[in-house]
Image 1 (cartoon, rainbow, N blue to C red):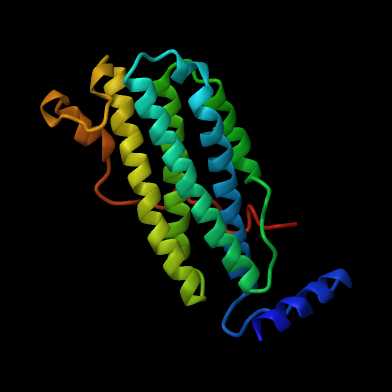
Image 2 (cartoon, rainbow, N blue to C red):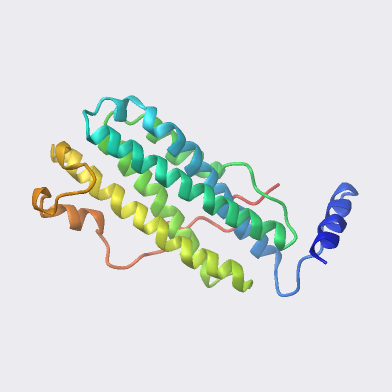
Length: 218
C-alpha cells in the first residue's frame, strides 16, 4: 500500500495536484516537519564548515582536535534528524525540504562564519541549537501526528544537550582554560562556572521558536 500511495502521490505532483494527506495528519504537520528539516539543513551546513574555520584551527591541541570531533559528531546527529523530519514530511503527503531556513541563514550562519574566536563560534552554534530545541518543543503540542510528535520530543532533548555542551566548552575557552577542552574531561580541572554556563536555564522556553511555516517547502 505504501508503494502504491507513493507512486500515486508522485503522479499527482507531476500533474500539479497536491498529494492526499494521511488520515489524522494536517497541512500544518507537513509544514512543521519541513521547517524542522530546514533548520537541520542550516545546522548541517554550518557544522560541516566549522572545524575548518580559522577560529577553530588557531587552537592548540588537544582543544582543536576535541572541538573538531565534537562538531563532526553533532553534524552526524543533525543529518539523522534531517532524515527523520523529511521522512515524516513525505510520509504525511508533503515533500522533503532540502533548502535551509531563510531567517536562520542570515541571523546565525553569517555571525558564525565571521566569529573571530572559537568561543564566539561555539556560542553562535549553541544559539542555533537552542532555537532548534525551542522550535521542536513548541511543535510537540502543536502537531497532530503521533509519530511526528515523538520525533519532535526526542530530538528536542538532543538539541538541548548540544547547546549545553557547546556553552560549557565556550566558557572554558573564554576563561583561558583551553587545556581543559579535552575528552575525557577531568572534573577537577574544570572551573565551577562550567556547569552553570552550560545550563543557564532550568527550563526550556519557547520564545525563540521559529514559526512552523517558516521553512516549509515552496
